[in-house]
Figure 1 (tube, one colour):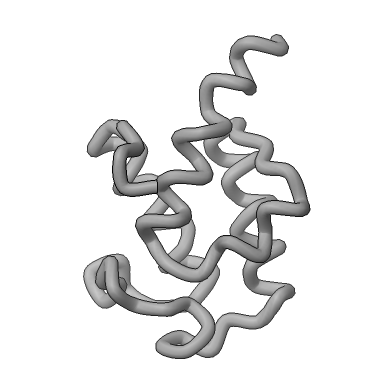
Figure 2 (cartoon, rainbow, N blue to C red; figure 1 turned 30 degrees about the vertical axis):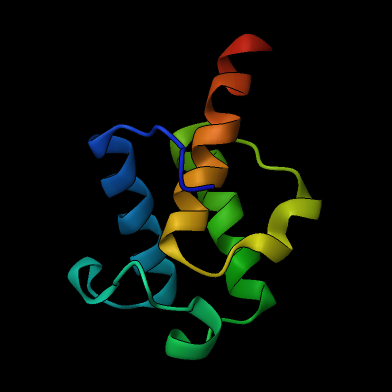
Length: 90
């Protein structure tokens, strides 16, 4: 997922959403942090992130991809991969 292209604005939006859900400052999240291990996120918080990505960014990510979400690079990749699909189906 390292070859994913995502705008800096979208990166910051994703970081802000994740930080709000995890109840930390956006600057406190590093790319190496595990949401589970470093921020004690559980499955309900991951579901909340997915819901906010959809509600705030208009990006619907399939539920079967929730298991992948454990760090910022993965969050960025998931959002980037599905961002174009929202406009394509509209």
